[in-house]
View 1 (cartoon, rainbow, N blue to C red):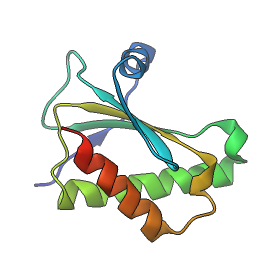
View 2 (view 1 turned 90 degrees about the vertical axis):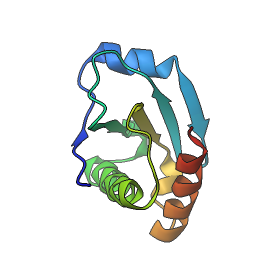
View 3 (view 1 turned 180 degrees about the horizontal axis):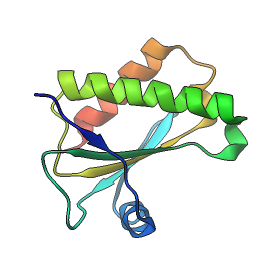
View 4 (view 1 turned 180 degrees about the vertical axis):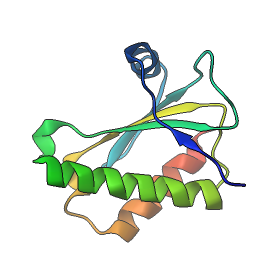
Length: 113
């Protein structure tokens, strides 16, 4: 099944997700929960990297890694499409190997029920 990934767009969506469930590890913090007026056939997810992490090149590298990991996760694990997700990256993502980050994120995504 080819799923379309949509980004969160309104500030109300971000604010409501920040008040809901949270899972954190040393690479990212996942905020997830239900949003009103959401299409359950599409994955609502946004990636956030703070300016403290580095310049635009470094921040975009982190976002590309996260997008790639989530695309693989949609295919391999059953991600709940009923939730909307907000992923906030931490600076430790820059210095670690892709495989290790991927395994850690997969474990956290499996915990979301």
